[in-house]
Length: 227
Image 1 (cartoon, helix red, strand yellow):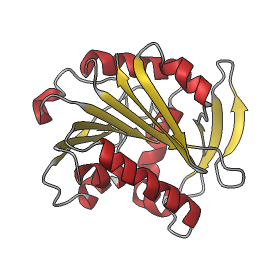
Image 2 (cartoon, one colour; image 1 turned 90 degrees about the vertical axis):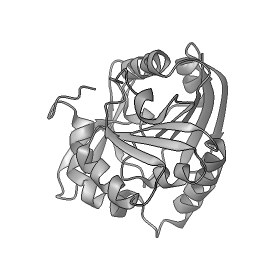
Image 3 (spheres, rainbow, N blue to C red; image 1 turned 90 degrees about the horizontal axis):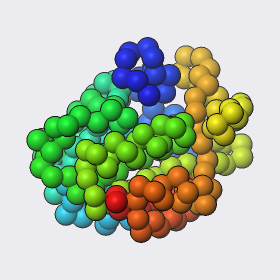
Image 4 (cartoon, helix red, strand yellow; image 1 turned 60 degrees about the vertical axis):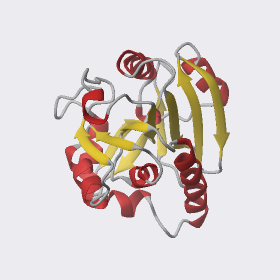
């Protein structure tokens, strides 16, 4: 991804739906997904306990609130200023959280200046939007900017027939692209990958250690440590 405005379709889409994101993607009436998210949130809170956390792709702050309950401090970041504005509003009063516009594929060198040495990284529903070559760049960037032994936690979607965005095509690199619809009814074709456990282990194996994967009906979680 590039951080040049208008040159990142994923960022452009989420900017366009920022004000409607929670209603569109966190539907309280979907009880099964809410149960999954509640279960995942409980485990995330325990994993982040006492850590100095870098959250990437924080969106509207759903997991920021969860992490802030137990973490020492949180730097919540997103490439979309519009999404981050909603997260700031939701997180008003969270004294251990700072917010920053940041491209997860172009991490700055001064990350530790804001919250101290980062000991854990959390990315919720971000990994699946990276094309495979971007996943490698993402891991390389984390190792360069955060360093070895930091905890990395990834949360993302399972494909659910009839509920997940319609998969439109698979490209030559094996990335799947899905159709998303914004609040105005416009369609956006975005990368949206649904990796198997073996694919995750193969993709991350050279950059991390101690991989553990859990799956629910609507989402999966992976924990590991950077090499």
